[in-house]
Length: 367
Image 1 (spheres, rainbow, N blue to C red):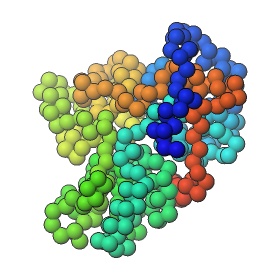
Image 2 (image 1 turned 90 degrees about the vertical axis):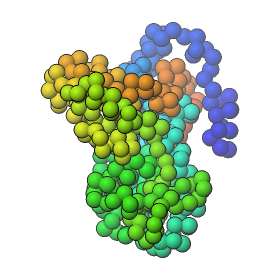
Image 3 (image 1 turned 60 degrees about the vertical axis):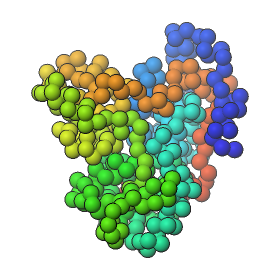
């Protein structure tokens, strides 16, 4: 059964009673359940989650960090992951069989991760091998499905994060002449560019047309970028930067490397979500910042740092729609099903897929 077919099942639909509850009632019930379940319950929350959910998180962080914290928490039997589907998959891969990972809303996916499915990837690998032979190593951003991580693992590659992408790309070039970077073309392009690889040495694989987008002799290609992107970060534009420069000339611009090369190149700084948070925390009082990342996080940084002038690089930016799927009613629903002994939305990665995905994760973690 496909994920879309599953979502049509009654068991995946929020019961109407939760829509009738007041916010205060739901908050009180969540607190009661957390106290009742104690250390057997662990709620990790991604930085991009709503405040109404983050307030109940036992740990807040990036996707891989939260999966690792969950795996290290041996007391936790129930891990209610407030993030998106691929994050819950990674948590299930790293945790033990007697730990159960739950995603409060199965609609909480990631458009970037969905831009590279396993069938497209295996087809692309065959066609690229016919062109480049055994000269490629696959790398995948952790923002990818378990199936893609498994593909990379069994083909000798590794996962990367936005924090360690430079180190992992260097490692990959020590193994092979070329890399295939999945699924976010912008992180791959920005990382390779920083390492001295020219834009004219990078090609884009289009999984829809099954074509290599490149002008010139393909033998010059060093980096093959999958044609995928983050729908949030791609919406920060050069025009946004020009507007900030003209209206706030003293304001520094910091963006996530999932933004386009043009935006990253014109910004003052760029880095992972963790890097952005730490940069703002360590900046001087009175400093001014325009931040190019997800709006829930930007709004939270504004609230946490009233001594600084912080704005979103794009004033019309909306929060990540799929991250925003998890709300207080879905969180409460998932917790009550644990208490009732009839858990919903359990994320379980097939055993062989998990084994191969761990290979990709371990190659990264061991570097």
